[in-house]
Image 1 (cartoon, rainbow, N blue to C red):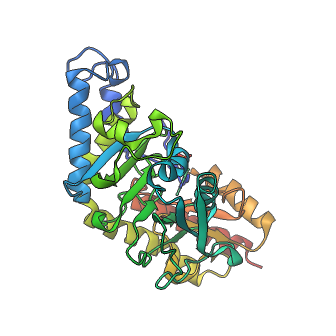
Image 2: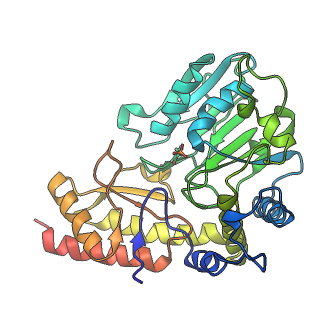
Length: 361
Ligand SMILES: *Cc1c(COP(=O)(O)O)cnc(C)c1O
């Protein structure tokens, strides 16, 4: 067996001990004689897996009792539509567009009502977070939408926008569980789990109870009503049971690591190693405004497309894989999620230093 350091933006690295644990339980989950993949989602054993996963997540994020936790399918993309269908009561919503994912959500919302782009950083290829302290929030907006960590561009809202009393809806896919958050600041926060939590194929939505109503837009499919899933404890239909099981294991791992405060310190330490190097490097440069840098996704360039390609190739040869930047921006991107060990980041920086010595003109 030869594990690599996997810097993929998603699906992404998972904690090795979680994978080993799942492997050990693959054929016989705790004396049931079967894998969790083979189990009825209505069984008592699975019910325990689901309830424990939810409780561990509630503990980690200190989720208040008046918020529901939903395990949903369809990826983050389905939420781009589910959010307006369920929350756009006045058919007006304000979007802050800080990257491709926010843009897609914004465009999708336009199908259902009036989506206003109240701020954007598109003028500088989404390399910063706009000042959101005094935006022209629409008086009749049902919510203000953000993508909190921009996976492709490597920016992060370090301060939440001033929504002037409107509900805040946030896509936290790529910063989920990377640091503590105050759930009460949001009406709804959600994320695809394949970035920082588990295997692909599921979204976790954390939504304030009073927002879960029968009052959805006309024509909303049953399956796309939050209420259907909330009333059924995420078991309206067959859920992504194995994914829930894997996420549950990652929650336990996070608890063991000391919870989200400890993860934040660890993530800051890892990111600092990479950013400090980028700041002093004569070859590599970070592409994001310093104060808006993400702890999770770190894009960088050499300034030469050929050198970028040579770097990505040479890195892969020594087991540092998936460093190619998103196809829309080029360059490199190192995603250093919770499960990326400190050693992985140190090895990457050592390799970058060596590459710089060999290629600097
Ligand atoms: C990856 C990603 C998405 C898209 O997720 P899917 O599960 O593929 O729909 C949306 N938002 C953010 C922030 C992402 O990182």
